[in-house]
Length: 103
Image (cartoon, rainbow, N blue to C red; front, side, top):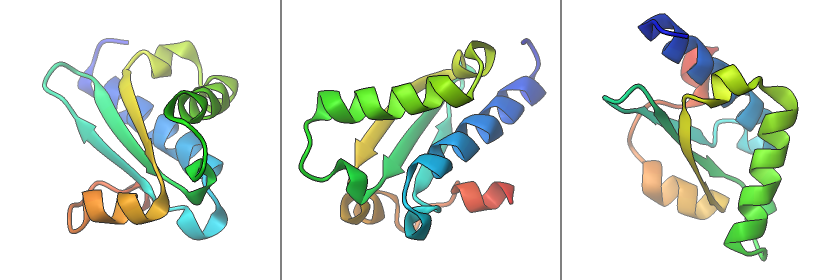
């Protein structure tokens, strides 16, 4: 994958898969930022992460992502930060870049 369009398409595919991980009422709790180095950073907010440690959160989200998305697309993803829904709102409000932008 070499063009900017590939980065954008991969971002859409990854964001959609991450949105499928969170609960229905949290479907807009995926935020992304594109870097100048042609990578994308995600923040995923869900109460599914409450009460479990950071390593387990990472295992859950990466296991989910690798089941649904090809490694070609995942290669653009440099990080996924996992937070609960309340933390997500604090971190991202009032920024844009939510999965709903792709719908």
